[in-house]
Length: 193
Image 1 (cartoon, rainbow, N blue to C red):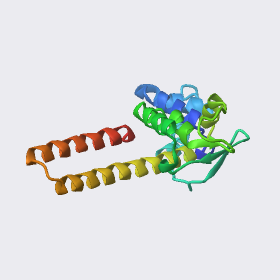
Image 2 (cartoon, rainbow, N blue to C red):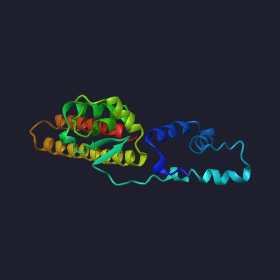
Image 3 (cartoon, rainbow, N blue to C red):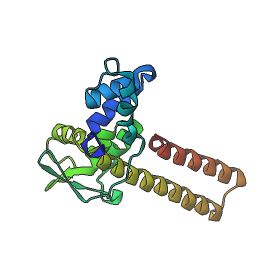
Image 4 (cartoon, helix red, strand yellow):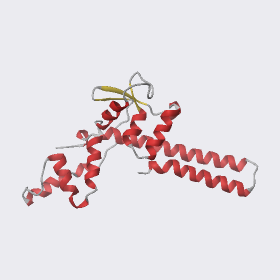
């Protein structure tokens, strides 16, 4: 029986793709994960087959690790954005805006002994990430989602307090406050999905 421990990011992305076709999604996912064709099984076996997909509705969070081993390659998770170099931060933000989970993870999972994009094979990193267990991917994603939302909200509160203390017209204060709110919304919006 398939469980989350057997689902890689690549398989998860395939499942998401299969779910787009509502009329046939259960049929397609059963065929993809279990090689069960519901068109050919007896009707009394259908509930048992569908029960095999229940685990997809409950995605547990596993412990965040500092190091990951994927396809015999070792990676260090860089969870401290203040330590990112300029290109790493820009790539992270760009991949976030594009909702590219493989790209995002390629900016935070760095091959052991390397710094971000210092000449290692980025394509190999992305291929490895596709083979990463989905539970690990989900945990890393949730960590960064929470972290970045908190940074954006904290920055917004700080800047709004700074505006209150700065001498300027009320109109300018309102305009700056609106711009800060727009910026925060922009920073957090790619993280909502």
